[in-house]
Amino acid sequence: MIETGSLDLMADVLLSTTAVILVGAALLEAVIPWPSHLRLSAITPLLTRLGHKVHRADGTPRQQLQAGMLAMLVVWVPCAAGLWSLRNLALSEPLFDMLFLLLMLESRPLRELASTIKTLATQETLPLARLQSAPWLKRETGKLSAMGLAKAVTESCALRLVGQWAGPLLGFALAGVQGALLWRLVQLMNQSWSRKNPVFDHFGRAASALYQGLNAPVILLLGLPLLVSRLKQAIPLLRNGVLWPYPAMGMLLTLLADKCRIRLGGPRYYQGSLQRWPVIGSGDEPNNETSRKVLNILQGCGWGWLMLALIITLMEQLHG
Image 1 (cartoon, rainbow, N blue to C red):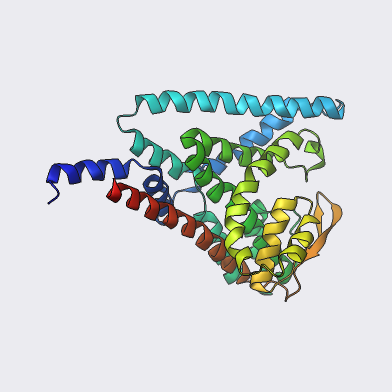
Image 2: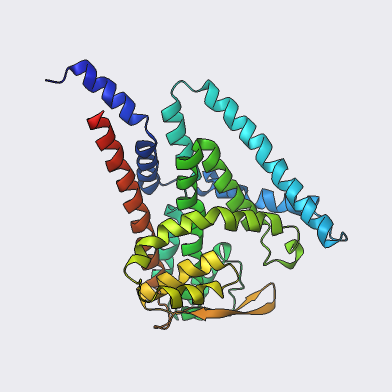
């Protein structure tokens, strides 16, 4: 018979495990409606202003690249040092880790955006839908049709979920709170200094390269369940995804497009400039429900990995 003291000790150990912290933070983030000004993405305008101040518009491409690398250090080092200090002062490190990870995750706003587009992306309310989605999209929305808006939001929701939900979770699993902070700050810097804006073409190159590198293992985990059922078509699908300007992201979008039988990509306007991106997928055009469907698929894959980690942890504790 297991003694009460042993059960209490097992419970304390279990609650301090990485898997329980990951699941707890993800559950809390899914149900707690954080105000927009308290979300970490609220610092994006500040990072954009920092980028404009630090980068030299008259500098050479190499000088702008160096300025972008310096800006990354200016943002990362103080935040990492402050986080280390706060964690050392916390009365309960597992509780601190869970609350901090909760602040790093932002999937709920994406689900709200998908619900908004589902409701408003009609001919009668299309101007309002464009206005609601404009802060989430780098491309120009003024001339988008209902189908074009649905496609843009679908792509944006999928790619942002990788950076602001799955990425911080994997970062925490690999390197604790510092890993989660690194993943999320890099996502925000890449978004704030996007190379789609000609001003940051060279300045944002370092942030973009680091962001793509960090996302590669995240995309591998999210895409693996989708790829398993498509092994016979794996090579053509992945070859199509490599044509995307960001190959790892392109592969994930290709798998999602094949899963949902839709087409993504195509021409779009950035800062008044027409860019022709490759078309991926061979199904129908996205509709106002596609973005929610894509989010459900991606989060389903993510939750599958979380549950697997939790089950393995429970088995280890029981056998221990």
